[in-house]
Length: 256
Length: 241
Image (cartoon, rainbow over all chains, first blue to last red; front, side, top):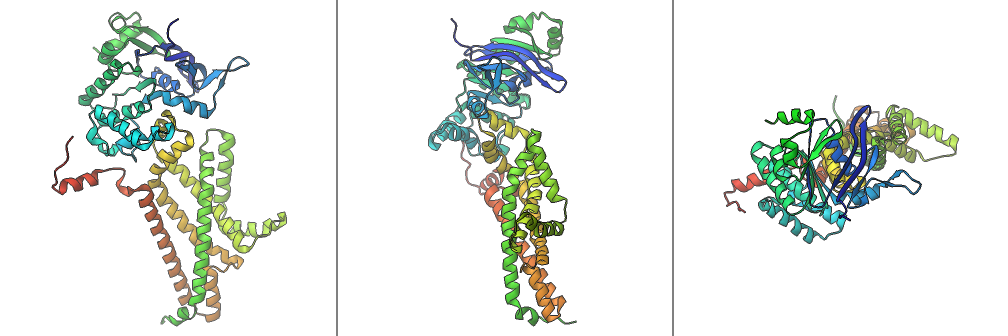
């Protein structure tokens, strides 16, 4: 018997009106595994990511984090039922989500952005939470920025603070939604390096990205999303160097 | 014509009483109106129709009737339902409900003025909807909320003059009384206007102070830049990491 996957998605579907964004996806991600999701824009990869922590409520399907259901769980009478809001809120910190646009809280300092959730949601006392936040900032090369407001940070710094904010809740799984797409080219490398370090430390990660170089170097598996489905999946060199489908070949040709 | 200021001095007591009553009525109505406005706005924002429709109906009902008509309906209509209130109480209730409709729309607009991603990042990390509102959304909506709420509050102070029609002894009513006794409308209403102006100016100043206290940042936005600039300009060495 193998270890329980950190993330286990079954039969996930999500439509917006007549538009199907996610059309039935199954995916298991094991502990410490790095999965990169690539695909054309509008293929449903971001929606899929947001369904994992129920920021979008999927129409069908189940999501489990290390075996525990989030959002929808099997009902005693068969089928599934929606969990209560409180149950979902309690599951969410186990999944860290990093947004393309960072979404730092502009009225709080960098330090407070990181320390607030552990204090309020985990009952960590302030001194301890701030010490942990300072450790994270120092590790990300931002020790001097602890008291800065987000408006005074560069894009790359904001994204590093956002990653620290998510890590402060000690998640079992980190989701990245195009984390470098809003950054200036010269700072993309900083953020990717940081993510690579996280990966090497054994963090389980699902990364929606257009950075094929990063995916090739860091991913254990690449998933090619197309029209709301997993069209192809495999180790990086196999998937990138020997694409099986015409769709993927075409998609990859844009990166040459 | 010459202004006879002694008319005002002789009746200063009545003006003062009226002003106190106007302050009391206005503050009570503003406080109650704001208190009602928050739940109404949150219901109005709900994606579920059973929640948002009643809230919308509430807003449209109280916003679309002239205050004097609404006040008369309350005062002359409620006794038919066995509810007999003092004119003053009726006035405060009516003014609070009237104001709450406007305040609710201001709260709703203020919440919507905060980018969607703010709520999402708060929820994603595990905050409940109400905690996210309190800790993340409210502090950011103040810059939008306070100026608009100031306007509506000033309107309520002025609208409270309508209570004179029910013989509530507020400022305008006292002005009318003094006018009836002295036959000096110009002096009397000039004094009344000046007192209203003073009260609303005070109220606006109060809101500005609360903006500084609550938001801390005011119009400068959430930035530490001015602090940094001050540090650089001070020529003291900038600590480096």
